[in-house]
Structure formats: structure tokens, C-alpha cells
Image (cartoon, rainbow, N blue to C red):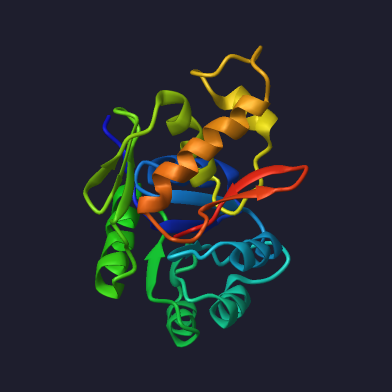
Length: 222
């Protein structure tokens, strides 16, 4: 399958772990997905990531989803889709009054959820298709321009990009790579990152891959 990642980032708040895994796996073919099972985890993540869409269950531990919806709207500009087995009209009306953009009663086909996310992204102009990654061909494109990376460089960039705002150590990068020998010095990771930075200057004037002293690297959105 030819998978292209765009800039859309999705937060899935669902305490049914089996359903969460199914939805996250499906949506990951189209977006960068973070999945959590509790409201407190969700509130922490929205402080770190600039999510485009939040898919929110209502029946959650720690606090009700309606209360969480209010808190999320206070600190995030993400569009919210309520995903819930609660189908009472009062819950639906309350969700919209609190700022949710859509309400999808369970059970549903993941393809319908994907379609609704796409509508929000399109109508709200939230998607930035300028940067995408072709996993199969190991290529990075920016505004339809091919950024030529070696296989090792691509693997590093892919790890950092898909774990945006997370610090990834050189050891983690090395172990995640197929094109890099584990017997090689970890200093070679520094060399590869330096090459990537030089090539990515086409994307942005700011430093996209930051060095975190004594810890590793992290990718910051353009």
C-alpha cells in the first residue's frame, strides 16, 4: 500500500482499548494518530501537540466526556467529533452546545469516522498537504518538490516526524533503523541528522530537528 502522511494530527480519547486499537490502526493509514484512554492524558497531550481533530468518547474514567470537551475547547483549537454509545438527545445537544463539531453514535464503521474527519479537515481548511511522506518509496515531498534522502536519512526523519515533539534518543533511532548498522558508532547518527538538516532547509528557515542536549533529537512542526 502506498501510504502518504499529511500534516493532519488526530487525538483519539477512548477507554475501550480494543476499539481504540482498531480505530487507531485504521486512521494511522491516513493521519498521525495519538490514542489515550483517560481525560488527564488527553489534557496533557493537547499541551504538547497541535491536534487538528479530537475524537472523544463520553463515558470515560476520571471525568465525563462532556466536561472534558469543555476543557479541551478552552486550550485547543482542534475540531471535536464525539464518538459515543450514548444516543440520548440531551447528550447530543449538550455536545454541540459545548463546541463539538460532530456526533457519531456507536457502533459505526471506521470508514464513516474517516469520512467525517475528512469533511472537518476540508471544511475547516485544517489540512496542510505541503509535506507528505511516501513510505513505500522512502521519499519525502514538500510542495510537490522531492527532498532526496538516503535510506538511512529517511528512516531517521520518519521516526522523528511521526513522533513529533517527542525526544528520541540516538539509541532509539539506531535500533529503529534497517539501513544503519548497530555496530556503528552512535556518532554517525549525529552525522546523518546533520545531513538531513541541510536538505530540509528547503522546508523552513527554522530548525525543524532540534538537538536536546544529553537526550537526543525531536522534530518540531513547520
